[in-house]
Amino acid sequence: MTSKNEITVTGGRLYYEVRGDGPLLLAMGSPMGADAFAPLADALADRFTVVTHDPRGISRSALDDPREDSTPRLRAEDVVAILDDLGAETADVFGSSGGAMTTLALAARHPGRIRTVVAHEPPTLNLLPDAVDRHAEVDEIVKTFETDGLEAAWRMFLSTSGYQEDEAGPPPSDSPEQDLEDGRRFFVHELRETTRYIPDLDALRDGPFRVVVGLGADSGGLLTRRTCAALADELGVPVVEFPGDHGGFIWDPEGFAKLLGDILMTENVRIPLARV
Image (cartoon, rainbow, N blue to C red; front, top):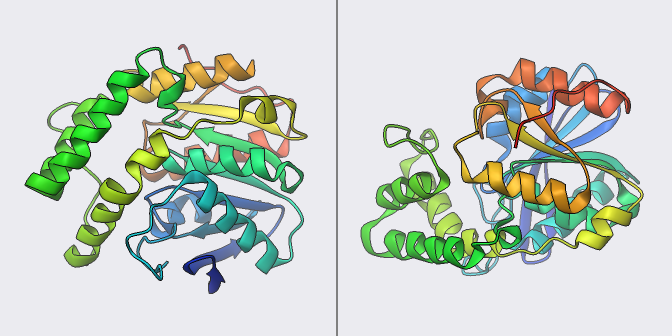
């Protein structure tokens, strides 16, 4: 059974879902919303109480001012609001892509609320030696959206991320209008802020929580292979290999859930390490 909830947060409303039973786990993306994580949450629900949500400005999480930018810090405060609404002191958190950046901000800003943070393929571009060039690519993607539209922006985004030409963007929803609005939020108000976020490395090294950096087994050609390696090196932790690629939790939710659950439930579990 899935409960659907809505709470007031700074500058808007936030939609979230709860399913399952057991230790509290928050699974999140950005711009991916709750629907993208539903198969993973279902696969974990026999071991965890799993919370998923639509990030601010995406889908059912409406903002008072749609022009407001979405930053990892703001999104981290939204997650704290969910914890408070649930009456939960602590939780494990799993974030993928922009959601991984949210979890890094959350752990640094609210260390006492986190037990384990699993950051799956975070785009920590500022940790790369060629960060200036990578940021210039992001600026060009945003410009492409503004001049040539959503499809052209996705093509450029995927190309600069390391995907092959025949690989498509996110699957369409039942509402092309919502897809366009969510795409606008991502390219105009989120992509720059997310990829320019600088994690508080000292707070992440010294916090009372575990940090796990995850990389898809099939993500060897992606830019996130480099960002994962850079973040793990800074934190002094290995990179853990998860099933699939950047969207492995979508394509293989059962296999992904098995590994993620084992990591969270057993500190000394043998986990596959990625070659980076």
